[in-house]
Amino acid sequence: MPKGYWVGHVSIDDPEAYEKYRAANGEAFAKYGARFLVRGGRQQIAEGEARPRTVVIEFPDYEAARACYESPEYQGAKKLRDPVSLADLVIVEGWEG
Image (cartoon, rainbow, N blue to C red; front, side):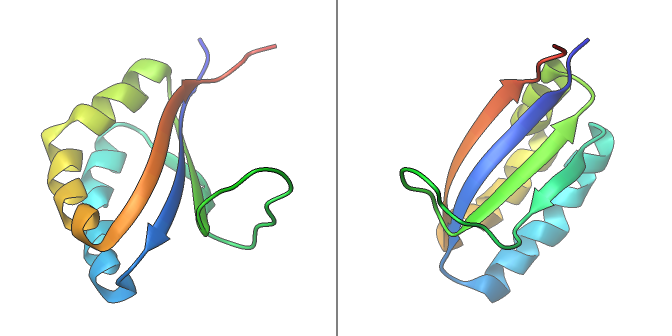
């Protein structure tokens, strides 16, 4: 069964307030088996446009990735993120090729 992923591009307006979101999202990520593959770090935009921060989170499968996003735990954390950042987030199924 292919894994599921969140691919996010984020602009943070208030880094101090964003830390509250990072502290709060851990409960949902632990519950749904999330593992960070990319969490910020250096990046070069080779084509097109992207926000300054990229995050890639791996889940056991696509269903877990969707369930995590829709969970009350994550939605509670997201309420802390929304006022202090802008995000583009895609939930995608991996390829087992």
